[in-house]
Image 1: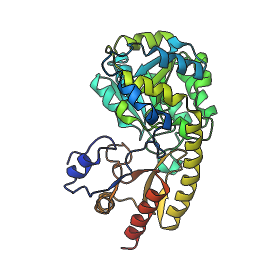
Image 2 (image 1 turned 30 degrees about the vertical axis):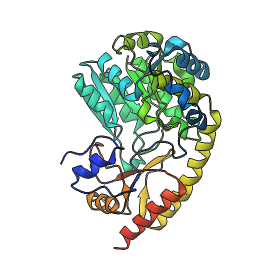
Image 3 (image 1 turned 90 degrees about the vertical axis):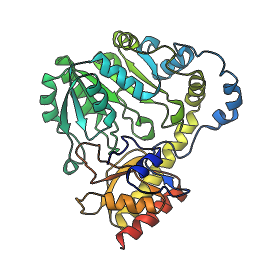
Image 4 (image 1 turned 45 degrees about the horizontal axis):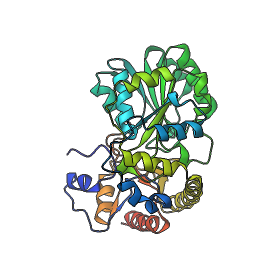
Length: 359
């Protein structure tokens, strides 16, 4: 049985399990903003579509300028990509055949990209007993003999974060050992806390920050992300990027999205409130969840250490599509990942999960 490596596109997941996708199923494997796309994007969509016959700006100049201004950096420190996935591949190519450390369980694309470019991948494991936090001294020792490391903050799939002071100690030690730290902040904007290390970008030339625009603004089909780093690293990464990588409509929509600050504020408030309520109810009906600070979380029945394929099957048969964790090293199917959706959708999830515990 070969399962998809990502959430979303539930028909492939369900078919791989030999099941049938129920009509009107809710996809909890897709962790984009439940509030949807900013209204201005929908209102201006016809105008965006009128430009479909023209080639896009190969440098995404307007979008880069806006993002650089918002992030208080130089424009030559920023690279736009066809989703964060393309940027991860560019980074893996840049470190081709080098030794890369990955803090896991985490987004599987880091490992896949590094292996595709013949990197030697070193694993540093997180554990639930440590609340999914890494042992700093152990990690400081592990980075001594590598060229780069991937760290997701907040982490996918746990939704957990590391304190900034700890991160800064890690990045400083990495700098002393000529190790590049790739910090994936794809979900940073869902958290209420100030968790980004961007304010320190000019203090550490050994840092690459990855960001996604598809999650907060619910535009995954358009594929849009960016990275921030030292200008010399950005210039090197550009050499591997194909021409017209980011389509013109994505660039226009991206500009509209990042101009809507209220959309992000509303989303954070909604996710904070819904997460607090949801986690309380889940604990009452017999489930353990990871201490997530964002819009998704790991879940398992209380006290369970079993493969959750039976629960996955039950959920699918009742119109709920979870994210499996078989390809997250260190989880191996003993958890499922679920997104935070609308109240009505979350209520439907809770109803099905409660019925599972009552069997």
